Amino acid sequence: MRTVIHIIFISLLGLVTFFGIGPILLADGVTSERLITLLIVIIVYIFIILVYRGMLKRVK
View 1 (cartoon, rainbow, N blue to C red):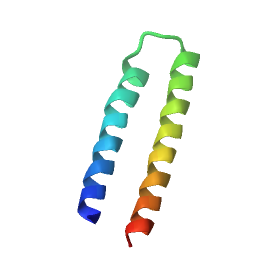
View 2 (cartoon, rainbow, N blue to C red; view 1 turned 180 degrees about the vertical axis):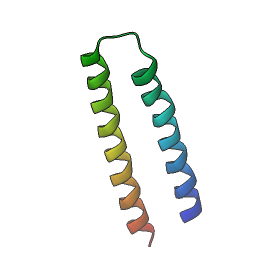
View 3 (tube, rainbow, N blue to C red; view 1 turned 90 degrees about the vertical axis):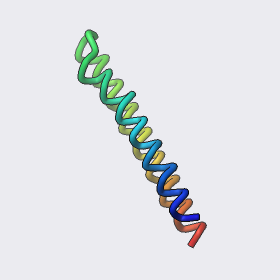
C-alpha cells in the first residue's frame, strides 16, 4: 500500500513540476504574473507534501 502512495504522489509532484514550472520559465508575461504563478505552484507543492505525509502516517 505504501508503494502505491509513493507512486501516486511522485506522479503528482512530477505533473505539478511540468505544468507549473514550465509556464514560469517559458511564459511571455510580465514578471509579476510569473511571480504569482510561482507562489501558486509553491502553495500546491506544500499542500501535496502535507497530504502525502498525512497519508503515510495514516497507513503506518
